[in-house]
Length: 253
Image (cartoon, rainbow, N blue to C red; front, side, top):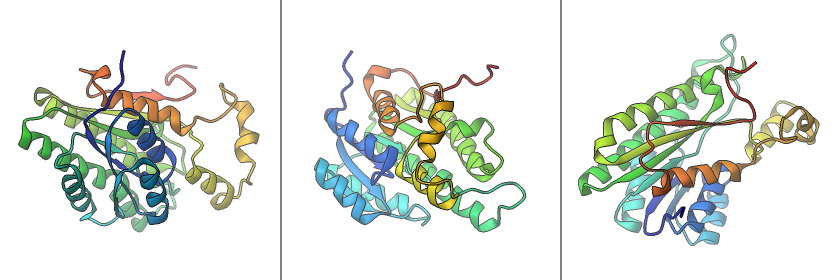
């Protein structure tokens, strides 16, 4: 089975670090042409230069960011064949302490921006009567989530539903939409959140490792491999599926 993205123009969000960066690397290795985007200009330049990719600095909090990103992809490659929505904010907020500003910011980045990026990608595919593939990086927290992740979990639940809705709406057009419900993954962002914001110390991941079935947290490249497979014809005709990539089986005791 060959997993190839040769000749396909893809948008990858959150590409400066973490899962987005590893998706970009894995997709480039599979032959894709890439438009990478992130709000971190320096980090984005480093990844894009390394991969020879086009880039568009954008903050997904801004309502016009999806339009700008899609326009940059069309300028660079003339089309959009695929999309990976990997960017997300994981700021904590429980039912009892979250405020409207946190709600608006997380929903803007984690749900609104992916929706309108999907809209742009699908419209481009429809205009060309061309097939395509979209992968949304979701979260196992969409099933419920920890108390302090109430707002974040709600955003991922929304995107999970949108993933399935888009898959149903566009299946006959050969536009596939799938997601990955990602478990606890050791990214730079999670390292900062745990070590600095939550005050758990620089060695928090090592201390936690023995409690995990694999003896470690998940790695960004493990999510990236699944994303590239879902983008490729090797996973066709799979659509409307959200894969739980986690170290436990939900519903098991």
